[in-house]
Length: 506
Image (cartoon, rainbow, N blue to C red; front, side, top):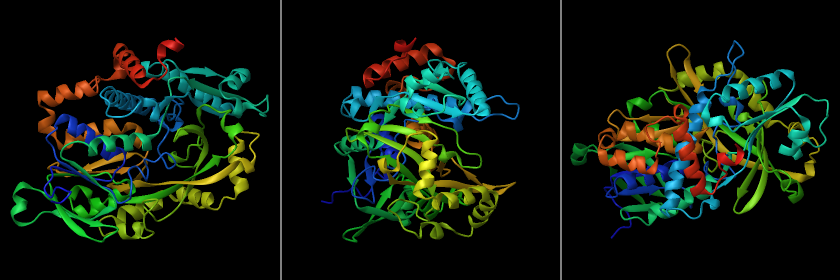
């Protein structure tokens, strides 16, 4: 007997945080579902979900200044911050459910409390941060946030950043004690370990999907997808006929979406951006910084370039990163091919891609400058956040690949987007996740949106509604509009996940 199901209900392509989240949700909603999971590498969470690549902060909009843009009139728009904060709270609730039901190990293996801070200098930036703080205080989601321009207070909050700084420099920071550090690699692997123990679920490593199309002849009647798979070691080929396919392959999603041929995917392209970190190698320096401190991106730089001095726990060891520094590669995956970008171009997306390129010449210039940076130039950027930094204490670490979405636009011809987007077929039988940040942190809300688009009939049933409310108590409600509910679910998830509670800081 083969160790796979030729006719599964579900195929998940890619063993990252998105596929893990969707798989766990679907098996809880309907335990009878059969699922095949295909991963091209030899273990789960090896690309963007890995802690050394892109994921790891726990994006909750507490400190990321690019989520709170300044309007032309000078006021600060916190709409996106509220949406992301609510999404992260849904993730926390789902992780608490997994922990309570022992689907994952103790929560400190993947999540821990750590302050989230924003730090700026210069009169205009200080004024912006103060306006941002005042605007965010209007939402219950951010009411524990503190603000200060006092150097001594900032020394207490972030000593590494303040040591050696000019005492006359005008600086400001916000401090959010409810921040977290999430190791999405560890969480993803824990969920897949659980999934592969479930009846009807098989997980295959070192297998690559090389084609996707509608099944022909008799199988066309039940609208199954033919998923053509090749083993990367043995070169053996097989075909799977699935009712539903989710393409959650990170940078590898775009080529598979284009191969599927669904009309909804026409005109989509991708622009790959690589990332790099400076990784601290001095244990004494690492031990002196316990926070995620985000700054403001330089004028003209893209949103994903927001600099931050980031404390993370990876494999039980505290690490300290600074960056990201952007780079360019034609690969769509860190372990991909240099032909990924050229092979993704076709007659339907070439116009949007050219138009997006013409509209983003400053981004191209920025990437060229980043690629050409010397070690001393990278140190200059670090010294703005850590004035006493020494180059010998840091080494360059290559992060993951991000493929930013390019799509057709009637007015512009093509636009480049920096968020995440789910593209699904009209009948809901196939969906692909494209894009990057905030990505992993909002995986649960993204997958709930996918369920609404691809499983609408099941989602309307009382059984699915009841189960979703069990997994995510705030499902269908806005935490930003309901302070009592927000405080209730935060207290519950903090207790289950062993995190700092708001009451500690009131």
